[in-house]
Image (tube, rainbow, N blue to C red; front, side):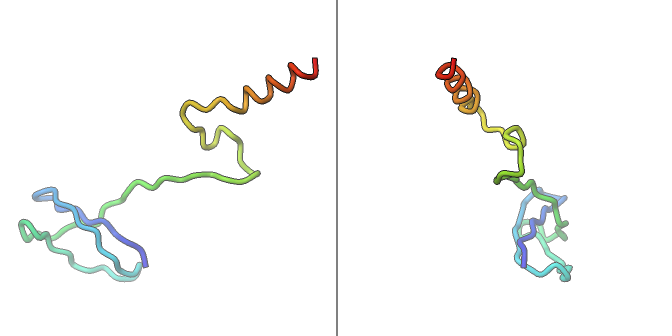
Length: 77
């Protein structure tokens, strides 16, 4: 069962509730008592494994792949 985030349109407060996908509970705000709506949250995705390019999940400040390839070419030449 997943967690769902609910946001109040009236006062802006947020609440996270754990329930099944098939449930549609009526969630009331603790602050003002109005009904809250389910909100979509951002999810971070990390691609790992040999089937992905290094640019699919680029880390900031990493240039290690370029330095390794440059050092190999210097040793060969």
